[in-house]
Amino acid sequence: VIFILLCSTTAWVSGVLTLRKSWRVVGALDLVLGWIIAGVIIVQGAAIEGLLIILVASAMLLGLVTYLTQTYQGEMANE
Image (cartoon, rainbow, N blue to C red; front, side, top):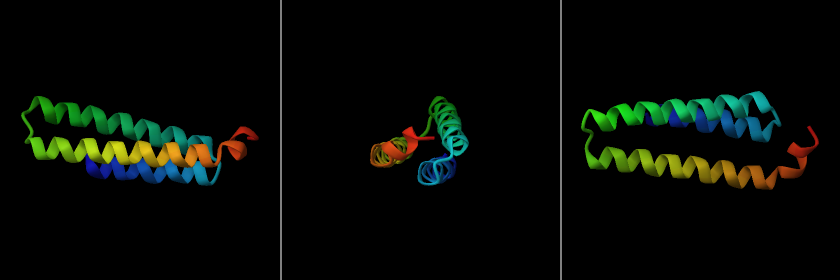
């Protein structure tokens, strides 16, 4: 799950920095896929530490994407 969230971060940040909407969509879909897999792991009885790592990684991903989106809002509005 962490690897999928890392791929999502890479795609989403690349999409924001290069102003490519398609990469931002790929990053969002990767995030949803990671959460679906995390849900399956939760149902199977994952350890609390693993769930905390997934939650922290998701929060960091969304925080970074929010910061970059607000920073590059003007450039993204022109595309």
